[in-house]
Amino acid sequence: MMKKSSILIFILLISFVQFTFAQKKKLYTPKIESCPCAFKADSSLKTRCAYLIVPENRNKPEGKTIKLPFIVVESNNPQKKKDPVLFTGGGPGAGSLGIVRSVHRRSIIQNRDFIAFEQRGTQYALPSLGGNEIGEALKTAFKNNYPKDSMILEGTKRLRAKLIAQGIDLSAYNTVESAADIEDLRQALKIDSLNLWYFLQWWSDDDSFT
Image 1: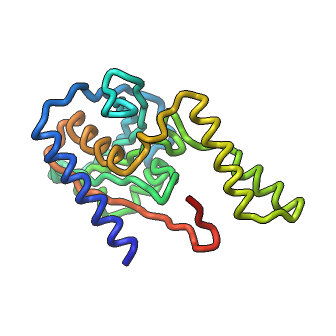
Image 2: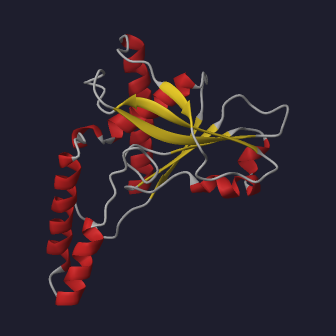
């Protein structure tokens, strides 16, 4: 039930972002920049790779920009439908691009193009908010028999401090901005509509932290 509710909330957010964009003029223009492919689909399918370039914080449109990679895998069906499937992962931090390696085995590619989109802050995005601080904190906890939860918190604080020192605006890495990224991608690719495939991965109660 939690997963279904979260997916519904994400879809509603995208709808809200679309309505908001329609009501006011954007102060920036999303850009597309070709880039090397982190992954490619089966050789029987055409693969295109690029970055979506958008403001890190849309409340500061003249400020820093971020690059969000995406991969378009084209269906070979000449009668394919015009509304592609867009896949993105979450939950948090999961990368989204690797799925293209198996898309040739999925029925969705038979009549639609497939887009894998990397959310802001995740593995292949620029910047990525990853770091080894939490992993190192856990190693210290196991080695010295320290409380795991307190060490995870300590690692999180260290990672947060490092990212802030790098000039990253952590307040801009949230679901609303991610929904706006998808809408910007849709517009930049001149797609009228798309089908969202959103994967959620949840921590267990023992592993969760904020």
